[in-house]
Image 1 (cartoon, rainbow, N blue to C red):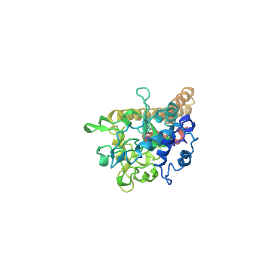
Image 2 (image 1 turned 90 degrees about the horizontal axis):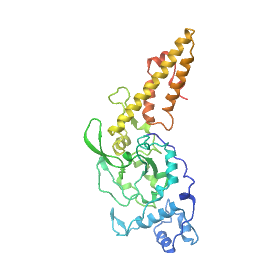
Image 3 (image 1 turned 60 degrees about the vertical axis):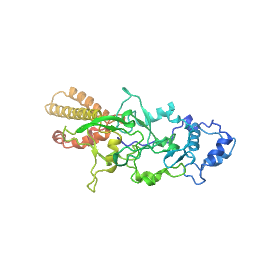
Image 4 (image 1 turned 30 degrees about the horizontal axis):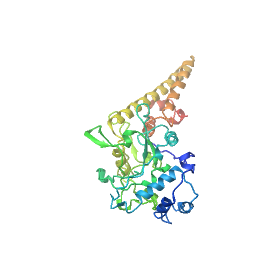
Length: 355
């Protein structure tokens, strides 16, 4: 996982084309469910009162969700009371929206930082589950509670680009862990204080920020929570919780690693192979510089060594590009590379090799 700077809401039809009409009966129904002090939706009140006002697809879908999930006659005490069919969430599947998310996350999974499109489809993931959620207290699956964060189903800030293994729950194995375990996020969304969970579209979901037990790739810096052992091959590819200044492991890492399945065996193998490849390229860069230095000192032609250095340096920097995989792990590898004897003997710093 790497931190992604989320851009502003994209300028696309679902968010800016107001072509959706609402019946008077529906407008009245939703008006009755929106508090005048609503953090998110008080601005909708005058628009809903205007018979000529039209709405975007995202706005209409959100209002439909409020009418269904926000109606106290439909849900109470975490149970569904109504027999009415729930409205369908479609906006997050919009093709233009998908392209913006793919670009934002550099075609990589928001959680595991893997490039997966050559072998799998992408999921548009809701960080806060839309229809129902699993409190997942103490890493134990619990009964789904309803409703979920229905008013955020079309919200740009709640959507991520994810692989199916991080987003869906699958029974998978892990290194040094017996048997298989259910890994993957699905509806899991634990908080440190369940009673303070925001359950209404009228409340400010930002108040949950300090209660989140799992990491949001667009908010949290993984370098402050994850640790990648790179000193020996045995643990290479595994991600661990970073030990904080208080001597305890990061709570967010402890919760996030199993929920996103970040130590599933195949992912660990892929990270290990990427680490070994990165290390090999780094050593090839140093070897080309060493060969160049020796030949130059001997007064020999260095054309071949210059070409080799440029080739290896370009490969090295490509492994650090925004579209490259496992960038957090590579930051730990770069720190380890600083102790390489050949790097120091050549009088170089890692920064000299990074474009």
